[in-house]
Structure formats: structure tokens, C-alpha cells
Image (cartoon, rainbow, N blue to C red; front, side, top):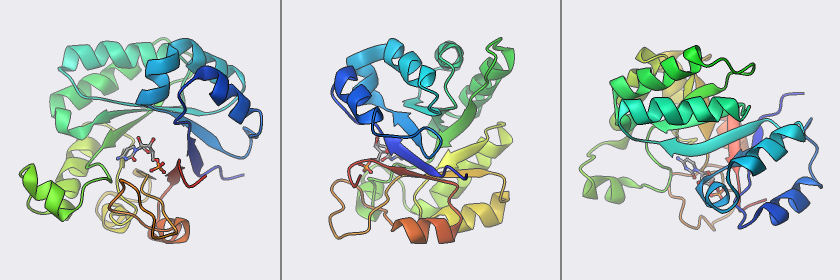
Length: 211
Ligand code: C5P
């Protein structure tokens, strides 16, 4: 079974999350714990979800000095998560430090390390306002740096997958939020439908509110 759907557990509490998980089969999907749930319920909930046999993507998007990220990734390894992420914009030294932390970890299960390129909530206008002139170029150069720093792949928009796969190979993992079938995009801007994302070569589709 190719479990390419990652369900975003963007809930306010651990209780709500565990009730929702009662309805999910860990052989059919993976799940993601992001900043809201982690801030509310902490590492113990992550361990509880791992104990329920779910593959957990710990989406805390670390972005800090290399030494701090090294320590944060070491703690993530101890939780037994399947995937963890950092912001590529933290730079090469930070990304290499995250990779080293995973290599040095004595945890039995080592997570995949993924770099966030540019959040899917950015459109051209928003990008310009933070000094990014060309989204495609920006995403491509961050992905290149991620690959050179030893990351397993990137988080990007489903719009950008094709060009990243062409440049960096099909084994370089593409994780894509911004999945929308309807006109209601909410705060997401660079969106595609699930079918389009898969056709473009996305490996994992992160889906929250539409589910
Ligand atoms: O509800 P929705 O499908 O928009 O949820 C997308 C999820 O993916 C959210 O948990 C969000 O934090 C996360 N995410 C994102 N864009 C990124 C990285 C993660 O939307 N670049």
C-alpha cells in the first residue's frame, strides 16, 4: 500500500486528536503533528500517536542557529517520528547540522529530513513583499542547497514538483501541502488538486482542512 496521504492533525487538544485517530487506519495513511497541536499537547502526544503505529511527520519547521537545530532534531529522533522538517532558509550550515544530528542519534528509527522551501501560503505578491522576485527560482535554489546539504527532500507547492523532480531526480522527496479541489483555498495560495499533485510527481500530499 502506497501511503501517500499525510493527514494534518491541526487540532486544539490531545483528546480531540486521539478521538479523530480512532477513525483512521495507520496502514492507510500517515499523520502530521504541527505547531498548534505540539504547542497544546507536547511530545507525549507524539509518542502516543507513534505507539498507535502511525507514521508521524513532526512539522515543526525548525529554523534557528545550527547548534539549536542539532539539539531539536536529536529530541525529535527520540520521539520515533517518521519525518521531520526544517526551513531551508536556515542555510547550508544549519541543514548539515540537522543531518549530522540524525546520523549521530542512537534512536532505532531515524526520521526522513525534509526542508521547507517557500510556504504554500505565499503568492507572487506576498513573495515580493519579503524580497523574493521569482518564486520558481527561489524554490529551486533552496531545493538545490537542501540536496547538497544531505536532505532527503523538500516541502513545496504541488505546482513546483515537476521542475524540482526534473532538476534533482525522482528520489528527491516532494511533500506538498496546498492541496485544494475547490475554489475555497483559505490561506493557501499556490494550490493544486490531489490528482494534479500526483500527476506532477508529488510523493506525499499533506491535507488538513479539506478532510
Ligand atoms: O488545512 P490545510 O490542508 O491547508 O493544511 C496544510 C497543513 O500543512 C498545515 O498543517 C500547514 O501548517 C502545513 N504546511 C503548509 N505549507 C507548508 C508547510 C506545511 O501548509 N509549506
